[in-house]
Length: 188
Image (cartoon, rainbow, N blue to C red):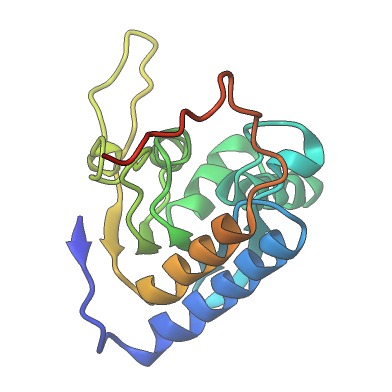
């Protein structure tokens, strides 16, 4: 995974700005603030935001929402699975936080061309923080394996981190209650 310098091109900031807007919509809906956009030939063709609480489905991450939007549209357009694969191979994703292991793996299997992300994901990152799934994998017995994709992080990372801080400072109303009470330590 390559880190993008803060002075990276204006275009990356523009697209990450759209992804940050999706993350803000997620935060307003009391979701973990992650958002993304998918581009084809420089045009935004799909967007997504976290919707895990709203849907009560842990797989409804921003990337999965955008992927499903695209697949639905392409099916409606009558594209075959091979045509869908060809289209994904030309797409670029901008996402506010490094894709988790689930999303990074899905992006690899779909054969996305490139991923740009804001902040790293030290707990669940699938583009190098925990696992390097963007590199791809060998073929399975069924003939399927991740294709791998180019990946660059650090684009507008401070803005993405700021959204997380704001969200967690207000408290996550959808977080599970602790199993045991917090123990107060006596000061010596």
